[in-house]
Amino acid sequence: MAVLANHPATRDQAKVMNRYDITLRLVGLLHQDEAVIGGIGYTNFDLWAASAGRQGRRQPNFYMLGSMGLAVPIALGVAIAQPRRKVFALEGDGSILMQLGCLSTVAARRQTNLCIVIMDNGAYQITGGQATAAGQGTDIVGIARASGLAQSAWAADEASFTELAGLALQEDGPWLIGCRIDAGKPADTTERDPARIRDQFMRGLGVRK
Amino acid sequence: MAETWHGIVRDVLKRHDVRLVTYVPDNVLRPLIEGVEADAFFTAFACTREEEALGIVTGAWMGGTRGIVLMQTSGFATLSNVIASLALPFRVPVAMMVSERGTLGEFNIGQSLVAKTMRPVLDALAIEHHTMTRLDETDFILDRSLVQAYATMAPVCFILSPLLTGGKVFSK
Ligand SMILES: Cc1ncc(C[n+]2csc(CCOP(=O)(O)OP(=O)(O)O)c2C)c(N)n1
Image 1 (cartoon, protein in one colour):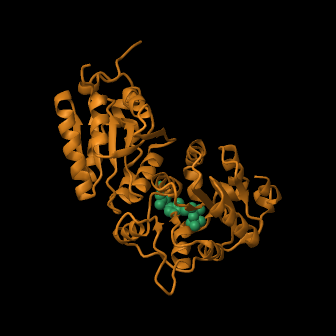
Image 2 (cartoon, helix red, strand yellow):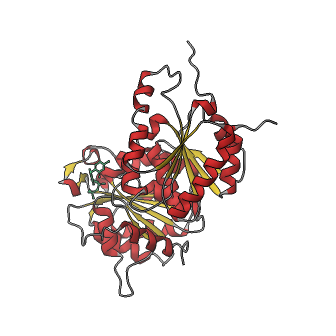
């Protein structure tokens, strides 16, 4: 964990980055087998956009269409069911603030194959950009550490994000990476077809053939 | 040893390979929780909210592991949004078991009032639910309803009546 020492201690010190760019970098690091859960808000829109490829869209992705705050619990469930698979939860700041207890549950379980990425734009962007508490002094990485997630860090910049995500892929977690995000619009809109999303996800996880 | 409701529940869950148990505790559920926590077949742990517990079971089912959420009546009252926006549209067979408060000798007015919302919400969401009152019916109801839930990919809710469990008794 000494490796986290050179990352910014607080939200204020982290660079403001772009969500689509960060999501592209994450998807670029992934192999085909990691599961990724995209939370409500624009987080899952950019996961959808970043997962489009020439050979079709990345399969083991799950896009939430409601159930605000449940990206981390859903990811934890997948991680428990498939302990050898790395599982990523991408969640907005407004959403994680609604379900902070899940950070404590992940910590208590010491779920080694789980990495949480917080897209912190300080706002409920999809509902009109109203400020969240994260934009007014709340430090979500600090909350995560105090919840027992010792391997929690702010990404100082894009290179730092790539380094942290790479660590999460290689070493035991649970991990939490905080990303400060600008007010840019998402690059696309998720197709709202829950039955198809769930079926694709389960095929991507090898639960369905 | 005489059969108990919680012993039967544990056996039927095993028979159907329901391995994951997430819960927010309740006094009546205590013997069931202790039973599954003592049994290595199960992965069982407390969650901070019932919504979280349902999200975990949803993710686990998509990953190939069956699960059940244990809660009390007041906890069920927090779930309508995530049932309607996650379990139902994505067709995830989440099993729920609710220890019924608010009836047959309730002493807490908040419990009795929130309990009135449970069956109307289950009916409004068209969720299969059964109120379990008798030891001799417990196996049958659970066994058949779990078969149905997984075959039809639909959530199911089991309500544990004080008639079955003894409930929580008024004490000054
Ligand atoms: C329980 C619940 N309350 C409110 C909403 C409305 N809502 C949908 S998305 C959202 C904001 C999400 O904010 P955040 O997670 O920060 O993501 P962003 O929009 O910034 O990408 C809100 C309030 C909802 N869908 N569910």
